[in-house]
Length: 434
Picture 1 (cartoon, rainbow, N blue to C red):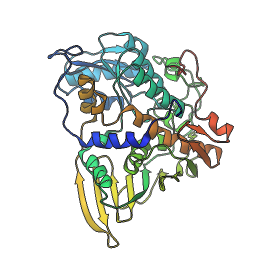
Picture 2 (cartoon, rainbow, N blue to C red):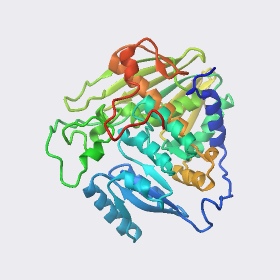
Picture 3 (cartoon, rainbow, N blue to C red):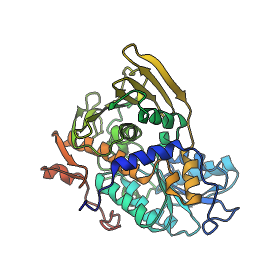
Picture 4 (tube, rainbow, N blue to C red):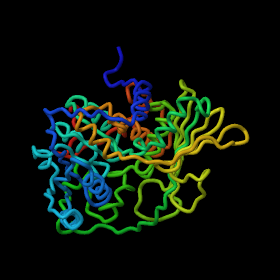
């Protein structure tokens, strides 16, 4: 008997690729969910950084209304509400506590742009409250959380879109189809690149919690630590308590595409090396990280590299992916461009640059209540985030990680296995039984 939490990764990846290649959507909207003139009412959770993009992405869409903004920092929240009124000519409801948003029956969907450590629990709570969810990458802060997200979306029959917007790019969908059709032959390796300019963030130390911030709520599921501007608001990305480093930040777009292009799920063997070589600052996560993910049964491999400072690009890609086959290679640049080079002479092949609208794709699926429409379904949140988590575990332990993709457990290493989850802080606990 197969383990309860096993998913057919190969079938999922193939189905996802096929769904992403189909750009048309059903026109039927169930009247039991939305009337012909009803707007999908969206609440944006977390409005300091990426949430600003969410607001700008939803508000112009037809039959969509950003109905509520939510953030535990009331100073940020009121600034964003003021910006909203100035830009769109109307007031918007504000809430500091996301639980009040989930209790609001007038909200149809939530769009989560909170720090990483909140993504899974907020998604699970939203599903339990009957809300559909758009959740930023990474979908999870650890592998246990990712599995619980998948279970919650299924149990409560909710639409959950992962914020890997390159899956809505027309060009990238075409690129994946080329890989499936054998344009570059047997695709045996993918390389993920995250070469981002990451500066010295200093060491700011601790201080009293600033006025307007509900720091308990901001901390949520994570361990409570004295307040510091070393992590509130943006630099939490580089602290293990809240973030996952750049492989689990920008890198999720690329881990997702590596897996999508190779048509694989989670790997069996993982290694990683790196460190902090540039700055004596408060970052805990590595500035430089090179990780390798091996699929011995499939005879495939993923290489992933994070660099923080002055560096060369690789065939013009600094944030992107490269796929290698026995007949050529493909370069993915950013979110919406690919180029192909064929044969020993690297003869230019097909290329394209064209984006898409990931928010619109989510709204289309919400209105039709049809998960098959989603370009970035909840399984991508679990798998692409899980790849990054495994790389971080290999780095933090300094050991080769042997992983069983069926049981989603690390083999023969209790310390590493404990890193698949975390100790949660009441009442912000990711439940075992969703």
